[in-house]
Length: 169
Length: 168
Image 1 (tube, rainbow over the protein chains, first blue to last red):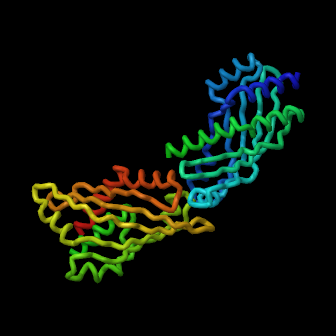
Image 2: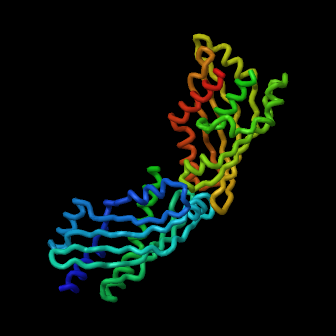
Image 3: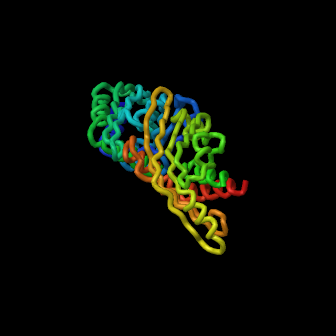
């Protein structure tokens, strides 16, 4: 049963945009707006009602909700240096832990994200999410997730999202 | 007159919310008080704590300077002739050279401003800072600076700051 659920989860992840947009950014927002150099905080994000509906539909009612947390550790000076001249920034690996609610037993999955971002005159010119260390799932599914997470399509989506964010500043 | 010209300095540097104390106007005092029509001197400005707070710690310190080149007569003429009338003056383009300091690095950035000032009844009725041509940073960052510099709200603040100084 567990393997079946993981297969469904992986299938959804690999065949959709898998957006989970509802962020709980209270703590991180405070630190971001402070003068502290390190954005060192826990960021939570989960599926919003519309995404939940899509998730349930896409998984034939099996997966009902995804909630994740990420511990951010971003030195502001590294970002500022990249924006003002260095042109690129590599962030340290960030652990993401997700709880997947199903119509049966819930399960957990973890992975690391160590983004590398490059800027040019137009904004973000290249991005590598560098997803790795998937835990909580069998190795072969972990490899599929890493492959998808580091695939060109998702990097392109991440780049577009970041550029849209910059354009709206 | 001296206060008026100093007020012009403030508005032209587009950081209208910043107090007078953060500008170093010493180099310009002689030029302001001289009979020469051209106000030709270097004006500098630096800010630490405020920029740190405003940028949420991304920028620690900023120092800027510009070589002023302003015709006193043009500005005074526009002001004096503004009774029941809109009178305007366009200052020549000024390059502002800035040193931006993050926690561990320095960066140089240049901004061109070409302020336009309108008087009505001897008060400043409108200001356009005309911020443009930012160099030393990626274009997309430069565009954000230009957008901020030309934001109507900032023009309004520049106008208010200039009028406050004129009344002193």
